[in-house]
Length: 307
Image 1 (tube, one colour):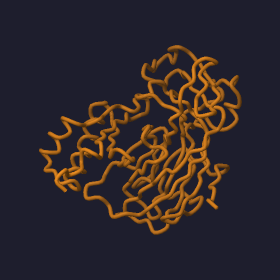
Image 2 (spheres, rainbow, N blue to C red):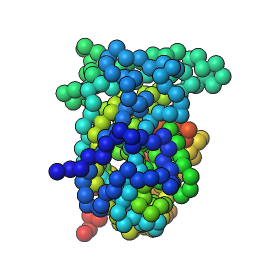
Image 3 (tube, rainbow, N blue to C red):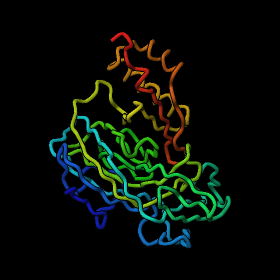
Image 4 (tube, rainbow, N blue to C red):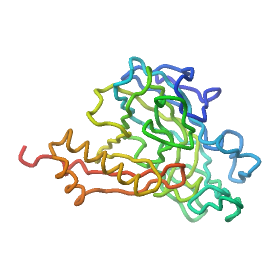
């Protein structure tokens, strides 16, 4: 039977080194992690619920469950986290919140004001309205390990992972992280039933509580692994997080050039030229302190036809 890591008493608002572990996971073991909705419990309880300045306090959003101690993990390793399944709550929401989103009015915090749309999530769809149903695409918004030093808020991201908000991080994907601390310190949270590219609204995905079933493996660290890498059934993918947006894109492409050169037999110039023909790339979110960009390559294009 899969062991469950409970969220109650185990929620954190930063991915941090030195935190007391809430549990241990062994390589190859499958566990189920409870994840709270991003504005924490008790606010979104029905389709009539609304968020306000009184019940959401930044930066105390995106609670992550953790840290989990990975048995045997140490600096110099790479941690591969495979997401097997996600069970979603029945109520999710999206919202406009002044000061958060693509068009922030930094001084007045006015914009469009507060608008909340709480929705039922069932039967594989988000019930946007009585007549409009949106197919779900479950994903984990916050996934990462303890950083080299100190802590990074769960609204932010970096080479350790964190608030990446990448749609490819969901059931069937494996995400690989550089390990910075003994035990790695794995955190999971901020689940979404659905998210559009760019996550144009600060609380723009269908935010939702979930139970995430995952397993971990310790693997030799890839030669030039710095930023998290993703593998799905059809693609390999690299990420970059930065401001301005073009720097995030450059990082993602740089990381893919390294991966292609180190493991797929390309020279670096050849890899760069190759990406010019076949790269699939986009901004997955531009509402966090650092934007996220993804660069993907279809696996079938990497097969050697002469083999």
